[in-house]
Image (cartoon, rainbow, N blue to C red; front, side, top):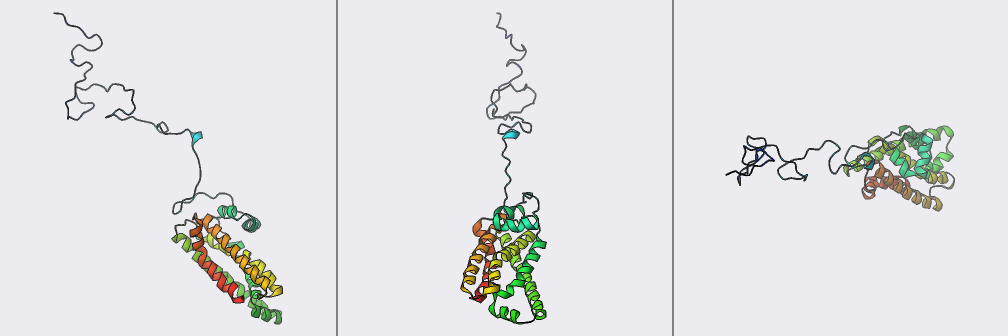
Length: 263
């Protein structure tokens, strides 16, 4: 009796194209004898098969124009490149007063030793006039006697600024910050000197115990706290509560050394 021929496949294999049924429970071996090439499937997630993709061809890949290139800072990780060029000293000082957040972010990777030491030295020369007893001694003494006293005070103020800035940087690192120590200390010294300078200018003429000078001292101390917190936030990529905690030791020391003695 003539059988029906399968005109679509080879005649010598009972299952067509070399495919044999797999036995239940037996693993499937691809490329083994008796197995032909895998049939084309319209499903990308066919069980037992893998789909190869080249770089950039994955289903969840985005076009280059659709990628969101956002540079963010992550505490404890490698910092991003600087957000801008180094600011000249005039723009640095004016930026701390007028646009502090942008200035701190731009200068977080740059050292500012020259302006920090110079401004702090000038601030230290005026620091003598913040105390009434020292102010009277300087004003009543000769020029040759008062100058060494003022210079020694300026050097002491610089050393205290370096130590307090180092404490602030160390605490910021302990809280998970990733900023560099040199920019942090330099910016902290600039903030301290610039914020307290108005009080000292009035203290030269009115004295440190004057009520207006004392009120101005408290206001400038609050401004110093705000700027130090902003600086640590931008320089170390910390939330403001941790940044304020990192600057707290320096703020308390400034209050004890320069504010409370004249009250």
